[in-house]
Structures are given as C-alpha cells and as structure tokens.
Image 1 (cartoon, rainbow, N blue to C red):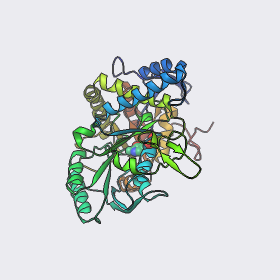
Image 2 (cartoon, protein in one colour):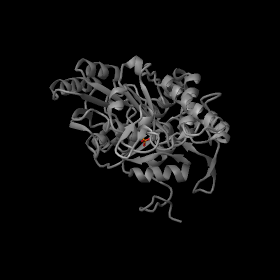
Image 3 (cartoon, rainbow, N blue to C red):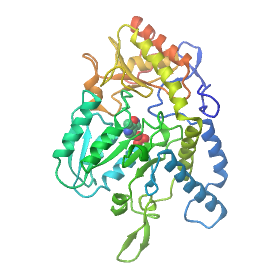
Image 4 (cartoon, rainbow, N blue to C red):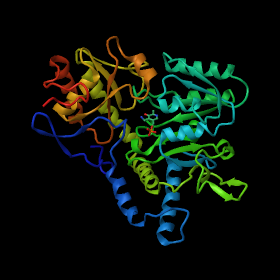
Length: 423
Ligand code: PMP
C-alpha cells in the first residue's frame, strides 16, 4: 500500500465471489467515497469518549470537543493554504458548500460555469434560494487553453457587477486537472472571483488558496479518507459575512428578540445546528495525515498505478477510455471507460461478482460531460478510481478482468433490474 501512516481501513477484507471463492476487495471507487484512513480511525477513537456538543456547554467534554473542533478548523485552513483572513466553514460536503455559496453571492452576481461540471457545481446557481443572476454556461472546451480563453471572453462580456467563475479542480469523470492558476488569473483580471470544486483534486494533489490566488475552495471529507458527513467551504469572508444564513437556527444567531434576529459572525453564521464535531475532527485528521505523509510522494505512487492501469486498458481490444483533452494531459487517479459490445452496468456487475472489483457505472453526476464523451453505441461508462489502498495487484486484476470480459463477456447471467447474478 501507500506506506506507513497512510493505510486504509478494510484493506484486507475478503468478500465472497459468485464463483464460490473469496477475494480481497479491490476497491476502485475512491472517487465516490474513499475508505477511512487507519490513522483517522485512531483519532476518532480518541475523540469519541469526549464527544459532546461544541460551543454550548461548560462541561469538560464540551470544552475538549470545542477545542478539537476549532483545532480541526485550523488544520483545514493549513491544508487548503488559507490566507490569514479567509473563513473555513464546516458544511456537509461539496454539494452543501456550493449551495451555501450560491445563497451567499451578492444578489444578481453573474456566474460563469463550464458544462463539464459535476451537478454539484453546475446546478446550485440556478436553484431555489440562489442569489445569482445570470448563469453563463460555457460549452465543453476542447483544450485547457480553450477553457481559459472561453472563461476570459465570458467574463469580459458579462454584465457589470459581481461575477464568479466556478470550475472543478479535477474532473470526477476523466480525472483531468483543470488549469486553475490560469483561470484564477483570468477571473481576477476581469475583476471576478473564482471558486474551485476541489472534491476530486485535494484527495490527490496539494491545493493552496494562497498559492493559486483562488477565492474559494470546496471539498468533502468522505472523498478524503474520512467518514461521511463533513465538508468544507473556505475562502473570502465578505460575501459570506454579508449573506443571511441559509440554515436558520441555533449557533447561527447572535441574539434573538421578539422582533429581530441578529445573525452571528463567521464561521458560526453558516454552521447552524449542533456542529458535526466528529466529522470535522476526522476530516481534519485526514488533512494532517496527507500533509505529513507528503502529497508529492503519494501522488507519484498513484501516477505509477494510474499509468499501469491506463497502459493495460489501452492494450485491451474493445476498451476505450474517456478524455476531454489530450491523452498526456495530467490526471488524478480516475479512468472512465467503455467496453465495446457490453453495457457498463453489466461490466460493473461482472467485475464485482466474478473478480471482487468495485467500480462505478453510469454518468457520474456529470451528465453533460459524460454523454458528450461516450462513443457511439454507449449510454453509460465504467469508472475506476484509485487511492491510497490501491495496489499493483488490484490494477493487474482489473486489467485482466476487463480483458477477459471484453474477449469473452461475463461468465454468468445477470438480472437486468439490479445487476445481480441470477441464481
Ligand atoms: N464535485 C465533484 C467533482 C464530485 O466528484 C462530487 C462527488 N461525486 C461532488 C462535487 C459532490 O460531493 P458531495 O457528494 O460530497 O457533496
């Protein structure tokens, strides 16, 4: 595996196959949710005895939990290279973060967004409660430089007033890394801001608000080797501080009278309700572990595995991988592909039942991009995504399994409705 300190929980779990054998689970679904790091589990174990509601109680446990929660915020700030006056708001995940931002931009803010986005960054701007005005949706750019040019032109011709460019750091469909520095420069030159959906970027690469100059970043703990339920919106304070909280309730309020509500300052302003202290602590522990392990080293290891997987799939007849840009454009450990003659759900079901390999199939909550990339004759794709528990054996097993499926089809009959093997 990736080495000491960065092991994942459940790496040696053996699962039953339809063949009657058992196999270690080859998890290729990190882009959906990554397994918990063993080091994160240890931090959670240590926090559990003290787990109490934060910012509310005078008891010892509440004090310990409050300290842990605020320490978690500082860890996250470090992890995303926050500037000294940036806010770090704990939310439920990337979807929540971007919906919060959509409700916090200045009224009638123009939002520029690429059609390549995950639905979490494509849709909040036009959804109920969003304060955005015009939403300019840019077509899929045929190259990174075309993306930069399209953003520049859209921002140049956008209505006067506040403007926000929303881009993904790394695509959850192709793994392709977007030119964030260039897009940030373009946004700032136009007097606009930029938010980076880093859900798929930060589990694989270091990201820094200060270094890139980006205004906001959003990501999810459950894709970063922490359990579900916590995510982050970090960045500039002014819009967030000026906005009415989108969740009204305890914690978000400074004072409430019969006739008036005074909302709290950041970050509590946007953390109404009892905060998810364990979620925040776990997410921050993952941030610390990744930083200490050295994201460069982890990245190099993953790239070697990714190269092995891509080379193996490229040699397999009837298999095509999906890419928006050139084959040598940098990617995180994500490969989506189709197998000619076989529907994606059948491939995914057979990989699981016959080989103990977990992938995802579908359109990956990025329908516009995935549909565009699918070759003729396919309406869905298979996605294999890598992470810290991925091994060469997993990669070789996947390549061999796909080759066998491409050549011979599945060895068992699968029910159409749920993709399970027919007994
Ligand atoms: N953006 C991207 C690029 C994603 O991959 C995902 C999750 N698939 C999200 C946003 C949404 O994250 P969450 O479901 O944790 O809110």
